[in-house]
Length: 170
Ligand code: AMP
Image 1 (cartoon, rainbow, N blue to C red):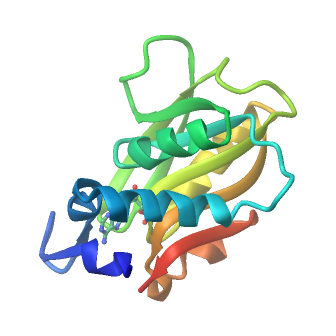
Image 2 (image 1 turned 180 degrees about the vertical axis):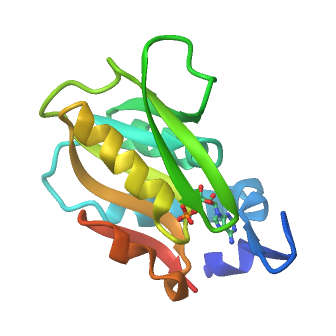
């Protein structure tokens, strides 16, 4: 099955000039959803233990949670500023469309834990870079950043020094 058929492009959302990659058709199709999670899981090097999967708010929560279950890992939400209730570390970052601040609970990852970071789209790489910095601040080790898709023309992977994988490339 070709899961690219389940990614819907919405032109000029949320701003003129942005071609938004909508994953809701993929999420809504049981076979496409399972195939995508299987493909992502197969990209993790065999024999590597994952202690925590980070999902980036909000679309990274869905498949991030499914990956955590697959790897029998804990799930850690990285959220937009002001959403997490306990003590946090924060990082501000640039987006393909705007700027934002992401936060992680200070006790979410123990020093030395192996972390898989998951999000739906790698665009300019600013988001993933900020999350890598938050993990480093907690002493975690990023094993991989995994994305449903990569907008390769934006060269986001050049921002990152950790292994990057994606199921679909544009
Ligand atoms: P970036 O920091 O530029 O790599 O942007 C990645 C974040 O913004 C991810 O959380 C994506 O969900 C979202 N994002 C950026 N560009 C798009 C796009 N064209 N379609 C859908 N989501 C996007």
